Image (cartoon, rainbow, N blue to C red):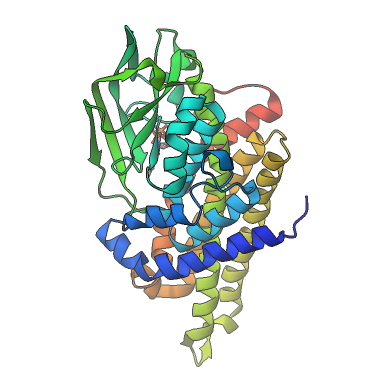
Length: 383
Ligand SMILES: Cc1cc2nc3c(=O)[nH]c(=O)nc-3n(C[C@H](O)[C@H](O)[C@H](O)COP(=O)(O)OP(=O)(O)OC[C@H]3O[C@@H](n4cnc5c(N)ncnc54)[C@H](O)[C@@H]3O)c2cc1C
């Protein structure tokens, strides 16, 4: 694995860095307080090609390799995890899954719009009663002539109220567990589909997280994506790559914590000297720095494996597990460096900690990542 970035990768990283400085950084505090990222950001992300990275150019994608994708997600995560999540879900979980599993008509219909930011995607797997145990989901899609009729509730859906299409997982037969699950592409304006914004989140406050309720939602059979009964494999393959992008976003959070801690420690004086001169403060900063490097290297390894067509699922779980825990630790250490000011939202580190906290929960909790890694090592499944 070559750790030196190519000219293209360096250029795309710089583009993302400039974009964050210009379009995100000035608004972060306001969006967080208002619980609302300005929706115009979606078109802007699309215009720069950030919603089409790694999607083939023939479907409107901007091409690029997975390391470039990680560099962009890291920079967005460094700026605002709420914005990073929009990309990780619409591109990482939805568009890339359509590119991998959709038929020609589904690709031609959805991908050019999703990659341009003219449409947004959301990923509907979790339900009120099934989170980690997603294979036992209860939303049902019943065949009725040339249609399916879908009933059920999806919980905690990122982009939920903004999305134009939901990649939805529903049970199409009575086989218990994951074998009865199929994947559907359902436009969110289909009659019978209603959405409710979930307010009061600890972090990612700017993000449109929603509950989706489907009552007799009728869709044509052409909404089925991939073979009937393959939905759980489709969801798991999407999440394996999704974990790489969450890990990259976490590197961004940890890097932002490091930047903030170093800056503040140099400015703040106590006992007549900058607090950076105290060894216990340096220890906090040094711990963050080691976490940043380790999380970034684990994440880049996943990108390298994906780009070389190697098996990457366990490496992605390791990267997501470490980077998410590292992001929480780093933001917490940075808050310690800030003292009481870190507790106030005029300063950046409190938001970093609130945003980081969900990273150990979604796309598989830390416990679930450990079970996936344990299964790969022992050959025995705990699920
Ligand atoms: C802000 C946010 C955005 C989200 N976005 C999406 C989205 O876009 N799409 C989507 O489908 N979902 C989304 N989710 C849902 C997320 O993926 C789930 O919350 C997550 O999978 C955990 O499920 P749960 O909340 O039901 O917790 P549970 O599964 O009930 O877990 C509770 C606790 O039990 C532990 N646990 C469970 N099973 C085991 C086991 N076998 N062994 C050991 N420990 C176990 C867990 O690790 C956890 O600590 C989002 C969640 C949040 C908070």
